[in-house]
Length: 138
Image 1: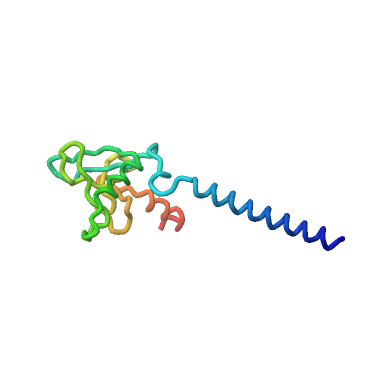
Image 2: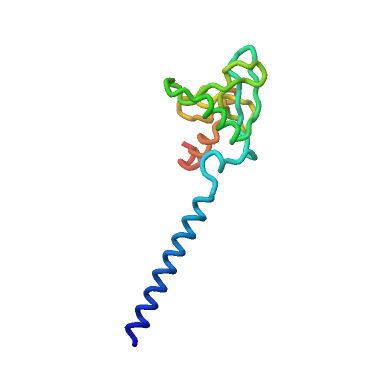
């Protein structure tokens, strides 16, 4: 009698585990993935590299990545493709950064090879400041 109860409990545990595995699989497969999981509430700065235009504006993160994906050229050596400028309509817009100190919009890594976020106007770099604090000001 005890063996039959033990068998029933084991079968119950196995069935519960299978139901749990199916439930977890269904819940995970219904989650958004890829670009659908990216929010447009966070904005990224972009800047036109055309010297006659120099437009600076923000795009939603999702919109930015969709435009990058649409403009990718598998035969190009460029890591990030140029996007079409909203002002001059040329393929000359790239992701940019905004300086936390002076507010200038600049292309990351242009002013300094060491710090990607170093401003081309005032030379401020948040990464450099943090590094100095951590190393004791050296």
